[in-house]
Image (cartoon, rainbow, N blue to C red; front, side):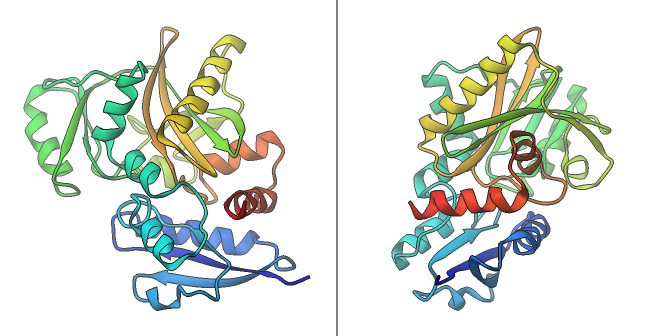
Length: 284
C-alpha cells in the first residue's frame, strides 16, 4: 500500500517557536512509518518544500503565522490538505476579541472586561500564555499592559476569576475527558505548561457528573460555533458551579507535557492512534 506523504510543519517566527519545534519532534517520533512518508519542514526558511508532492500538511505550528489562519490560507491556495481547523475558524480562535464577541452573542459566560485590578492582562493575538499577567494591585496594571503590548498591538483586560482550572479537548466528533490543572505558579503560565513538574494534571477532572457533562457540552458548542475542524481544546475556570470560558486553542500543543494527548490517552488513544485520527479527519 502506498504511504501517505505527510509534511510536518513546525517552527515559525513568533514567541511559540520552541513549543512548535517540541510538538513537531513529538509528532515525528510517533507517526507510524509503515503508513506515512514523513517530510520535516522547519518554517519559515524551508517554505519552498511545501509543494504538490505532499499529500497532507500536518500543522505543528502555534501562534501567529501558524494558528491564525495564515498558513491555512497558504495551503489552500496550493491545494494541499492540512490538519486542524480552516482559515476562518483559526483566525477566530486566535483573536481573543473576535472570539469573545462571538461567544457573547451565543450567550456563553466569559470573565468580564474590566479596567481595574484584580485582573488578567493578555495580548489579543497570542498563545501559550506568553505576555499574560495576573494583576493583583492597580499600580501594576500599566506595567502589565506594556508587557502584553510587546507581543501584540492590542491588549484585553479581564476580571480575575479564581477557581478550578480545567481544559477539554475535541477530536473529530468525540469530546475527550476533562483535565484538571493545578499549576505550581499563580496560574497556568508558559513555565507551568512546558516544564515537567511545574503543574499537576488530573484526568478525568474531579468534577461532578453534572458539571462534567456541562463542560463537555459547552466545548462541543464552542467548537461548532467557530466552525472548528479536526481537533481543538477549550480552557475554563469553574467557580462556585459557574463555568467561565477562557479561550479555544485550534492547534493545541502536542508536546510530551501537553494536555490534549493526556486527555486522548484517558479516552483510550495512544499518541500514534491520536495522530492517525487527526490525519484521517484532515483527509476526509
